[in-house]
Image (tube, rainbow, N blue to C red; front, side, top):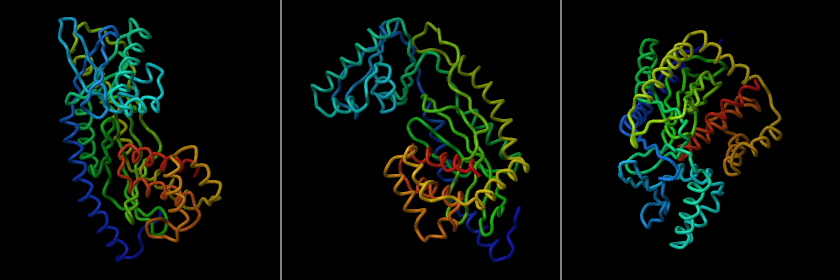
Length: 366
């Protein structure tokens, strides 16, 4: 492990760390507030009591009509991700779904009819879990979906961070996924001039868009490029089938599943914030800094992993003369940073999460 060699270098890195904390904690507070506020309302219903109707309001053109055993009727608009899940159940391609939505009233009516038939006729006897926030269905899921309450899990992680001298510094949240980052505010220099801080990232989805996971995390202070590295926890949202007879059912099952998840996340948080784990993560950066690559072949490999637009942006960044936003040299470390630089500058929360994870995955080759 290398260390800073001059007082001036240390002061600059410390100033950047303070800026990163100040800016990132504001985002973290906002995301934590959304996690607390955006608690899903759950509806469990058999396929025979799920209706799909066209609508002229909202951005998706259809709504779900859920009929309860007691005659209760609930209508929800349908978010983009839930629409994709519903279409998948009916074996409909999303480009066709989008075509019908954009075709006007007749298209929405045809789409609603196709989805209705696909659910009722194709899945007779099946039960579905619809998770809604603010009257919008964000998840259309199997009744085996394992619900976890993110609020107590986040509380536990904050507590473990405080005990280790770490802080929550940043996060990203879309309609269906969230991620929070925690660091130990201690500057390390795993390669010459590469001043960094280390910790972990935690993410989850209440709507089937990913597992409850934890990964080692590193941030480059020169430009605030973040990278989530190897996966240390992955708890999938699949459990026993929900069989509650209530239309809108209690949280008891979710509380039991959450308790199990909390124990594992606390243990992994302690591991990822330990001195030994941080040193091992820093050593990965050291190896990536020394590991030369063939830029042409490496950049070509991106085409199967990211969009054409992102692939071109990453290649432009990597091939640029910039040695401030990115580390110098044709190395795995520069390649990883080119990906995280594009992630940093994107306004699409979903894409940002995927790119930061990819930036960490490429370091495995080191």
